[in-house]
Image (cartoon, rainbow, N blue to C red; front, side, top):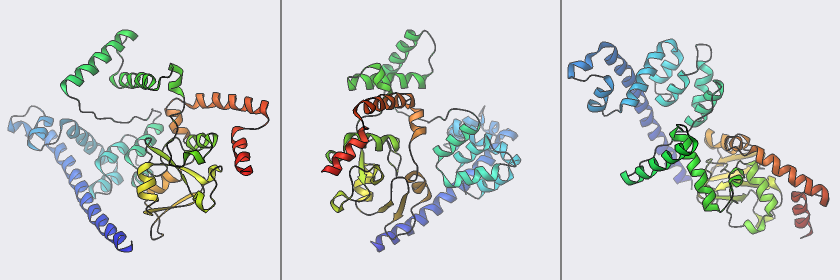
Length: 341
């Protein structure tokens, strides 16, 4: 095990060195493209726009070329960001995100956030700082027939609403309707919590406990943040006396993290659900992003983004009312049944 871990660390160091050099090249490319645009030298090759030159001669898409040029134009006013970008400490995507909100006074803070978080985490924080709703990019490749089907569905939705619905909003609405049809549910069901978490030992965990655990963890894996193919993992195995009724002994993991990472001891989970610690096989700390995700408490931000917080409050109120009539909560009744067993 130690040999494999050492080999993994050596390969990791080599790949990180390659990635850093690639980021340094991206920074030089951004500055060079800005110079090419400002000088107009791309026209000497017969190109009307610098984006056309980048597309044909550099194999860089016009969109990326424009983003790099805009970033390079902002760097003189942000010396700290410019230096970190030039040295390859952060990729151009994170530098572009920071440049949207950073000032000379705040760039050190945003650089630290960029170093310890993912692109998506950084984009979410910047959007919140600017008072905007965080957005997630989705790139889909479709065949001609599939594209025709999508365009027809979007056109019908726009006719139904009588307005030019943006493509992203239209796709989400169509997906929501499709999910309701597949699930055989009503329109209101689309605002409920996702389907039951899958788990090899699911029968050992009472349903109220399962629902509590997955709602607390935002219906996503505590290690990689995936939403699909979820299991519930016992921090202390039930075969060793670990409780299946105590939410603090249970966390949500995806099938890959559960079976291939945790059960194979690539990562070791210690503590409780509210104070979860993640370590490598040799006892050293796991990567910062993994620790940050694992340490996340209830997924209120995820549930809010999915428009389900109101549904949870309504469901909780209904559950409390029923519990008041019966004299206890579903979670408490499950614990009582386990205690009696």
